[in-house]
Image (cartoon, rainbow, N blue to C red; front, side):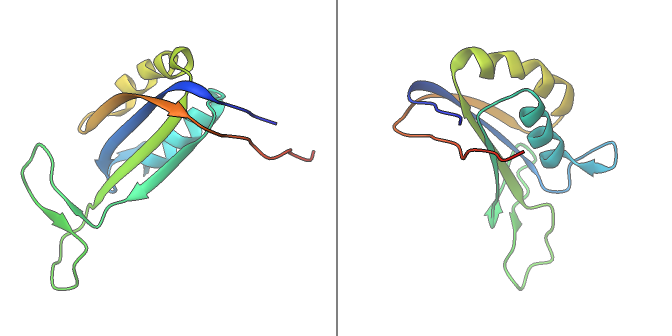
Length: 115
């Protein structure tokens, strides 16, 4: 069972949903690498509207034909493990925003995995 409480670091990566890594969605590659690195967990959130460095507004509104909606990948773990993962993001993220925030985990308990 995985447990994490107390001081931690939140890593948030903002990219576009059409960003790819070797013909695979970039958000999926980041999640799989975080898993392989043994990080506590990762979640991907698809935005309904946003803009970034390009200043183009991307939206999911029905009347708009915009694609490439914003995607946020959020990973929380202790600071040492998150910082050890950052070089992988240097390799993967060509356009986007990578943020680190100090946070406090109140409760995180993983499920027992049956083998």
